[in-house]
Length: 116
Image: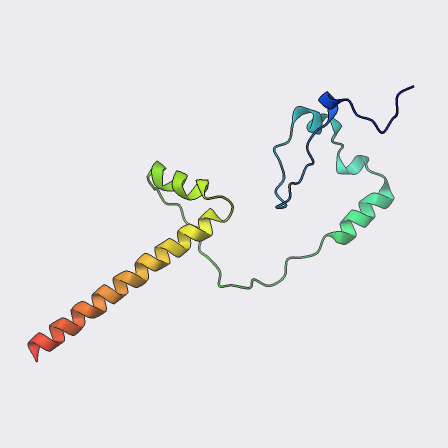
């Protein structure tokens, strides 16, 4: 009789969550094993619902949702950098914005000196 704890090598699947907390891509087997929430025992449903907490107040200023068209190479460059790519893109745009402010301020200073 086979040991029930032993899994054949072809039945071993990677864990759903990796070391970084990222959920792996679900397989057909994962979906086949899934059950609807309503099929769970009532006691488990209640425990899971008790864990659900409302979202707290936003810690940083609200960001504005927009639609923007960017070059595919720009988008792929940021996406390839991994999780948080949109925040990095936001930071790059802020850096550019700050550099443009400095350029404008320098131009205003030069203009003021020449007209004096």
